[in-house]
Structure formats: structure tokens, C-alpha cells
Length: 504
Image 1 (cartoon, rainbow, N blue to C red):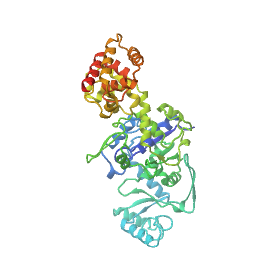
Image 2: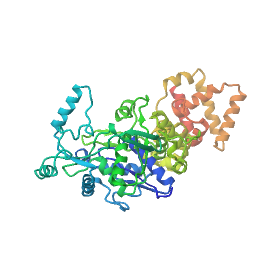
Image 3: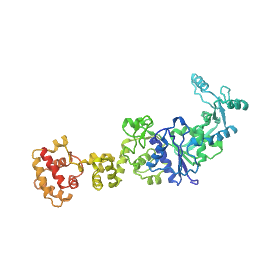
Image 4: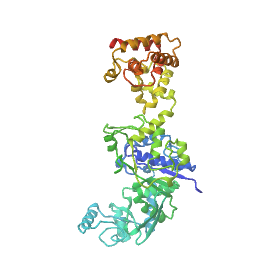
């Protein structure tokens, strides 16, 4: 690409960042890094009625947790600042005035009541009301296209409420190009004259978005599918200003697990999975779950988000961030919606669990359990190495490994019925003798001595190994029994077998 690639992620600070928004940020980041470009964060807070305190910090924290920090934005490399639209509102009026002066926009003074009447009149005739070429100069609507310049100025000076509307062209075919969706044709006759500016001095999203993207030299606009209907207006605005438009790419929706409809917080609440990257506490005290607090690794979140709409064209599913940057291509992003699969997200986390260093996992595990405060983290790391293959989250570790740290205080009923038979006590007493007389207490020696005794005496392996496991664990679960014995040591092993014998 000849120009320096510049993309932007432009969320509204109206609450927590949905994973759909996080995926948009990720795809922007991957595209920028793939082409050696800049990833810009812009906060689109023109709608102050919906502004939520702390939401901007949440967005920044979420990006940082996922290791996709912005290069340029509020408080960072402010080359084209400020980066909050509320701090840029002084910029927009001149552009609205420019369009009016050039006859490409106009003042409209219609009240909400008058527009509602027009809408109802159209509905009574089974028509849809649109404010555009077919009625803007017919006299029923009040705007500067039908008023004289003196009348228009008088209304403004009198403090009448107005909006500035874009004058969409008539009888034209607009040719649009989307990197993901290809060529699109739009008949301009079906476009309404969107509001660009309000009398309160604030622009609408459409004007602010175009002006900011131009002034910030954005080369590619990568955003959600919900903005696709606005593409025609945005391209017309670029044409009206005589500016070169960026390239556009509209990402597919993230769908519910059923595949029908857009994924929502309600789906997560109902099916038991988060839809936000970080835990979020609303102003009313309601707490929404986050992937971070639920125990997901940021690498796993990034990996599964990348696959919601993008396909590498191979069977490979595990991609580091560096791999994703190298392989990412907007032309391999699908048009169709991407179904969210909660089980697949867990699969990704399990895969990344196996890649973590045992010592790092042990430190996280130790921090979650007061029972482990006095236990050497290196011992915990050895335990983690034995059980992490069966874990999806660090919080799974305790259920999988508690018997490495304390003896069972009870025995699973179902397991007891299966493992404890007539003669079990005698077999376990003999097991104690073999363990006690094993000089070098190693996994190999324990295995050799016990298995030799079982084989030589033609005893069924289950008659010994099941009650032995029950004694050590309290249930018929866990890794190899010889590894467990080695880890807890000879004295503890003998004590646990003796406790089982006494319980029979």
C-alpha cells in the first residue's frame, strides 16, 4: 500500500465494551500492524445523554488486557488530537456551514410534531415518510430551500430550533466498494436527507465521523455491519467536501449460539458465559461477568475473536498475536454472520492453558487459595504439571488437585462401592508393607515393586489399584497413582492407606 495505513476504533463510552466491539478493535489492530500502520482510538461521545462515567477507562483497560493497545488516542501520541469528539465540537460547525454555502446542505426548522404529522399522513396512504428530494421543496416542510435567505436568518436569530440536513442527490446511481462485500450500487432516490448538525452546537455521528476520519488521515474504516446502511451517506459526504474517501470494510455480525440474531448480554446471562472482556459494575450496582475474571487467558480471547468472521484458509486454529498479524487479511473475512460458540471459547482457553509454564500457573493458583499460602510454589508447579491437561481454567485446579495438599476426609460413595470388596483391607495392608520396604521412593521403584507383587500373586490389578487410588484421592480420579504417591511422600502415602483400612 502506497499510503501509511491508519485505522481507528471509535467506540461510544455508553457502557462496557461488548466482545463485538472488541473484535472490531482487534481486526483494526491486526490490519494496522500487518501493514506497519497506526491503530487510533477515538472516543465518540457526542451523545452526552448516554455518556457513562468510567466507560472510556474500561475500553482502554480492555484493549490493554488483550495486548492490542492503541498507538494514538486520548493522552497518547496526540498527533491529531483531541481524540474525544466532545472536545472537538468547535471544529464541526465550519464544515456544516461550508456545505450550506455550497448548496449541499440546508437548514430545516420542522418541529417534531410537524414531522410526526407528515409521518402519519404517509402511513395512512401506506407509504413511508422520507425527508428528501420528493418533498423538501414542496412547501409543506419548513427549510432554507423554500424560505428566503432573509427568512432563514430571521428564524436563526430568533433562536428557533433547527437542524442542518444533507441534500442527498436525485436520480443518481452511487457506486460503492467494500473490501469484504464487494461492489454495491445505490439509487440515491431512496436516500433521505440525514441530519448533520443540531442547533445545540453538536454534530450528529455522520458529520463528526467523516470530518474526524479526514482530519486524522484515516485510510481504512473497518467497522461493524450495522454501519453498512450509512456507507452511502458517508461516501456522498466525502464527495461533497471533495475529499478522498478511505477504503471501507464492514465486518459481519456476531450471532447468538443458535445462529439466529445478534449476540447480546441476555444470551450470556441465560447460557452462562460473559459477553464483555472485563467485569463491569453498572451504576445500579449490577455486575456483569468478564472474560478476564472468569479465568480466560487474553491470548485465548484474541484467538477465538479472530475466528468470529475470519478464516485463515487452512486447518490451523491456534494463532499467537504475531501469527494473526502475519496471516490476517480482510479479504478472508466472511460476509455472513459468525455464530458464537461458548464451548469453542473454552476449548481455546484449554489449549492456551497447556502452553503456559507450570510455575506461572502455580503462582496464579496459589494466589486463589488460602490453603496454599504456606506451600512451596515449586511443589505446586509440579502438581499443576500433572493435572492441567484436565483443566480449562486455573479455578479448576483445586478440584483436580486438593488431595496433593491434604488427605481426603471422606470417600466417594459410588467409588467406595466399586473399590472396596472382601479382602481389600488385607490387600491394602500388604500394599503398605511393599511401600514401606521400597528403599528408594521413586515412581519407577514403586511401580515395579507393586506391579510385580500383583502379577506374581495373580491378583486382579483393579482389586489393588482402585482402593489404593481411593485411599490417596478419596475418589476414583486423578493422575497416575504412582505419581501421586511420589508427590505426597512415603509417610503420607502409608498414613492415607491406613486411614482407608480403618474406615472399612
